[in-house]
Length: 417
Ligand SMILES: [Zn+2]
Image 1 (tube, rainbow, N blue to C red):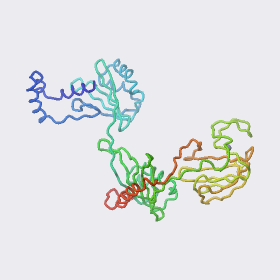
Image 2 (image 1 turned 90 degrees about the vertical axis):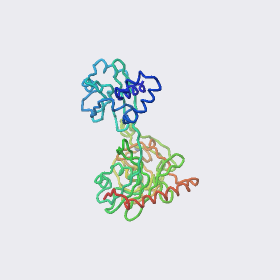
Image 3 (image 1 turned 135 degrees about the vertical axis):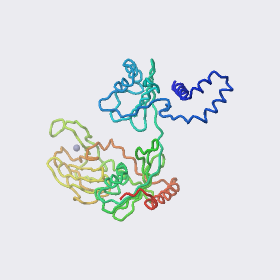
Image 4 (image 1 turned 180 degrees about the vertical axis):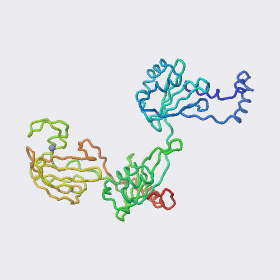
């Protein structure tokens, strides 16, 4: 159907002298068609439609503007619009059309200027084409080709990484990506003036225009005068970032803060509180264990609270990276003070029942981006180093990427500072 439509449109572009060819016999047609190729420029296609065959109106959906408002203006009677909405619902529900997104109306190239096609772009890549015939309607989905080009950026930080990138017109998303890669290595709240970075990253391009960033391929972050390299590499289908030695830049958390324990109460948004005798959310996981059992930090980090409160009893809070903080409640005794750096497995206190507790246990709380979440439902892929079998490949890729990184800023013109 679509193919036929395109062919018909293509023919419509041809001049009158060519349309008269249809009455000729085959041999003459072929000859004349050859001549035609020389005189008519290549037709331009967009969304699978021949742009030259129509008057194309391009605009953005206005607030509270519906498909009907647009199509009525382009001489489509309401019954046809209604038919279009109903019959193409399976492909795209027009109620999902959002203001601010781009649309195109392909109108007939005559005095009527009647809409033949309506194209909606929910984003810069995807599109839906609605075909509006006199009695039949149809729709199809498509996607523009996204190409990837390699880009580099570098800079010296004066305020924040985010600001440095924003000032230089580089997507601040790059800052988010960088802080994820270096979450365990660099505390982005303690960035020094003069710290710097170099990045090789992917840029996503549609129709020759950048639409966003893809993954970071390699980076070097210089922090307090030290270089921290990160190289992307895939082993066993799992992509991760590794350092110079081939160790993962991520660190996994321990599953529980106690070695031998049982879960006595899970994270839930609603539970009957045995002491307070009412339903209230439980934002932690309780691990029951005998009084005095050592409590471990589930990951490397810094102690940001070590104190006592009426409900929590003796508790400790550990900041692990820029996104994750953990908290341990009802300790009998604390074994750390604010500012201490701890390693995964370090004993930060001992099980007790201080505060609001019925028996000895740790109430373990996991904060992610400032919100308490069920750590048992969080997915933490293991942070394995490069396996023996991939070491040679990794080394080769690493050298290549390091050379690339070291050149960034030397022959590159996109200076960010
Ligand atoms: Zn609890």
